[in-house]
Length: 485
Ligand code: GLN
Image 1 (cartoon, rainbow, N blue to C red):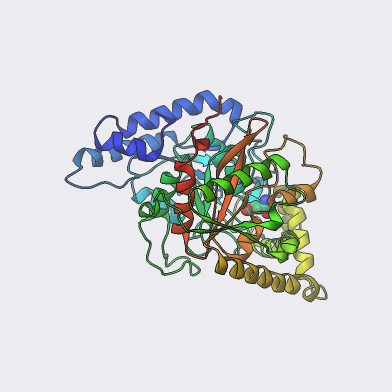
Image 2 (tube, rainbow, N blue to C red; image 1 turned 90 degrees about the vertical axis):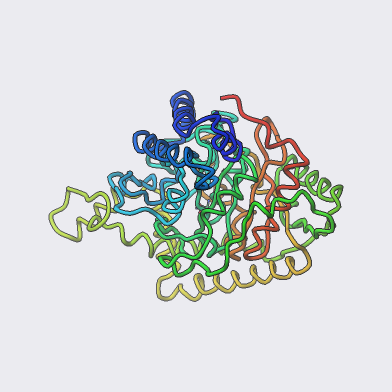
């Protein structure tokens, strides 16, 4: 049961072949079995989940007279930087180790309203800053395909939970690649929607002009189902856009004939693992064989994307994280006689080394005398990157590339070298800077670890991405391979 997709389980539910309680119990049994190896979760929500499952079963018993949603009774894991009412929300930081939000993030509200069962909160890099989940103050999460390898990050817990069948669906957040890169490393599907497509209300902010919430799933159909529930305007997030939400399942059409597919030259060259490159090249051939028109495109400003991102993201983070001072949220240092030392000690004790590094970098980039040279310049380069995409996506319907330059690396391999860690998001970061939607889906293996294919689209053209990805999925078998946990 735990290995099935949401759409498979939905069919069993409406045909009364199983119940949500049965599914939820199966998932918790799986968690119990796999968790001491994987450690995808920070907090489990078993009691409330079973209550939600019973409520879902009551609804299902009245269907089809009263129709149910495709998520009714389906267990979902939520990344631990999204607020959940009454459930610990730590952001994998010591500073929020005792934070129980009094409200739900809009995405969580929407999932609950659709009848989903919230099974627990998944591990991440502290405040979503990282690419391996090793920056978590909670514990490390392991890659279900190889327990010595990282699951990617920062949504490593969600991706590992889906790969290890410890959840049916999961949410992730993506500021520079945090949905797509862990999805690639764990061999699952991860979609970063267009900036503004999904409400960020209740997502603990990292870099507000880049952050976006999206689904992490076992296949494309489940990604579409989750998007149907998660997308849309929200009065509580002024950056969410008031555009109608299409039925994303209707975009799942097995046909890419005449679709113009651009292969990004800059992401097929130096620094990309040869086997990753070969898998993406093969994916390009698959698209061509299915009738797509392949075009090689160049986005020259990509070269500056990582540097630009680490100025903009850290600048925004340094401002966003100012609120964690021990006064209103989370932990307060006890070892202080006056307010100033209370601030100092709270932040010194509460934040981990990577978060401190970013606050310092961002504060520096924003400081008088350096603002023009760093922050302002980064904003200008961001515009150039946007323009490169506009040009490429004028000539093409979608762009493809590897999601990450390598397969999942070994635990501990990059922790001492932040720069090499930052470079693992070289293919995903430009997409956030331009605010575009992109997906990662499995396209091969190297050394028994999954390889991810990234598909990028125009703003609010998630349907085109879904169609291309679905066609690729239906014509390949990569998504059927499962790790042996
Ligand atoms: N790995 C990138 C970083 O460390 C992206 C993280 C994210 O998307 N949240 O900032």
